[in-house]
Length: 198
Image (cartoon, rainbow, N blue to C red; front, side):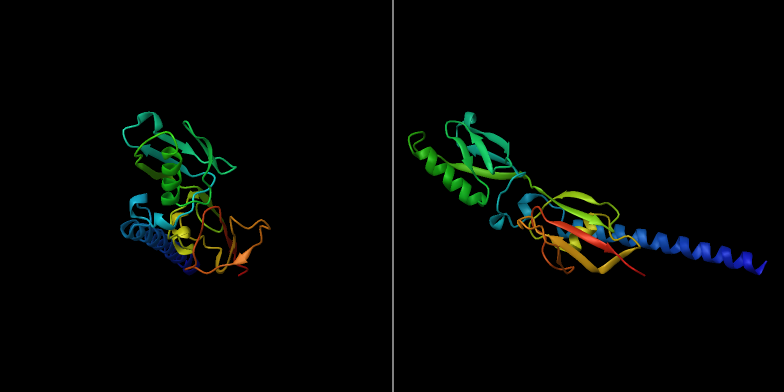
């Protein structure tokens, strides 16, 4: 009888613990939404963001609907633009691309081009290992490991929070490096939360 009561108590405690963990995860996600982690591009640090393969951009030129374009940057870092052909845009900021297009359109096409470039969708980074929802997520400037984990559903019970590694998206050697919770995540990064041994 006593053993059965102990088993019931343990089951209740375990259920309460799981419920509290779920509530904590939901609260964290809500807090980050309120702080703007999941906000649209207008609230992000776009001025420092470097375009790359996989980003979807929109280009608008004043009073020239034929020059309005939405395009995904190809693997070779280029887009195809009316009259101008293929243009290499990878590595440029939005402002630099606007200036480049303006200069090209001034060269025999338009007298006073006003060019506006916006990012419709950022390319992805990856989270795998001991998180609830491993996979690829759209990058957002200002992203940290802590925020990336929250967006991936939080740590699993087996996660080792002190053993997190990253392979940087721009690293040709694909070398894993240790990374801390408040370190930045960049486009194309592969973040891995390793399993605890205990």
